[in-house]
Length: 228
Image (cartoon, rainbow, N blue to C red; front, top):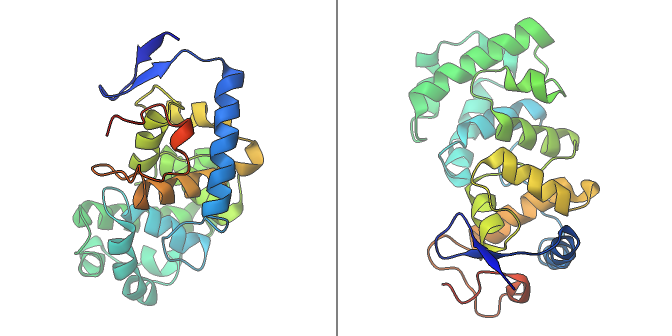
């Protein structure tokens, strides 16, 4: 079988039909459903506004670091209207332990003000409208729509980028292109689950530096097996 080089120099992609790749994806999905039947975001939140704020804060930061900061933040600013009345300097102390906290404080205040001005403080259930908000890109909008409202979509973070390459599901580096490839392979009704389950698999098993390949339940469908 001929192969082409993937985005990681350790990985070469087999030339396989869409049907064959979908069959592999189906087997991978079955394993993920067994491993993580209740897969969901690990960002602590109680409503769409809190999830939006937490997801903005999670850029280039760990979910754990965000979850440590947000209880006090949400107690002080429980909704968009409260946060809209703050200044970035007032928000900064609550998120100072998170990377890029000054820029994120500015974005959160501006985001809250736009939510109040445009949507009466509610989070819009519309990807284009979400992406117009400060600090909200394609990934954040996809995460919020899926986790808060059940809107189908596969958001791509560093874990999914790594797994899509290692598993031979997408040869791309661009997150939106990777997401489009994954959405062609997995059933639409499973997109939100697939996003969360792959994150968990990448975070706790197929890690960046020392993936736990021995005994991996997806090993037979992994094109990069033996490379680590």
